[in-house]
Image (cartoon, rainbow, N blue to C red; front, top):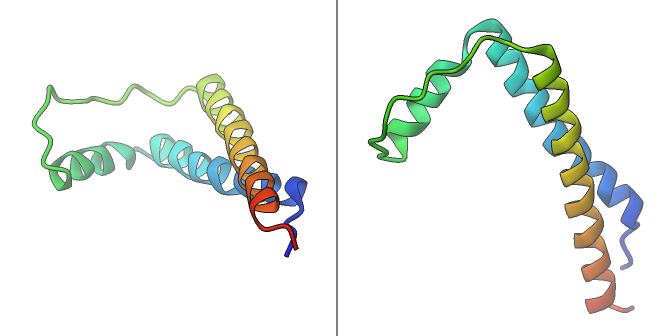
Length: 88
């Protein structure tokens, strides 16, 4: 079965961009620090404490755009490799 490379890219962009939209909302609401602390604990990391900066709209938009572009590229590449490996 052939995968549409563009649609696969859009799915990747939506997934990765969406996660970063959610992260940006968590930073805006002040919930992100707890997630960072939990993640460090759960991964058994003992490093210098990470403290999040205040919400910055420009940084959030940049993060979402870059993550979405990377997600598109990964989805597109996945579909391309799949289509070359499984020629049906």
